[in-house]
Length: 75
Image (cartoon, rainbow, N blue to C red; front, side):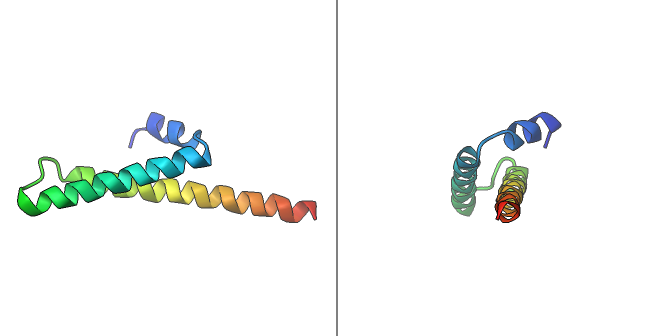
């Protein structure tokens, strides 16, 4: 994934990232469904989509932990 893509994803809000994850999961499902009947033109699309989902989930978790840390410090 290119650096620009990572930066644009990192700058998205949590809700936008969650919608991005759901869109990628739909894309993976559709590719897997098509793969059962015919070969996929570019199988690397699956890998990049899975990796993008993992990256987004990592960022969401990091943000969640930062929020809980700041809430804990304020107490």
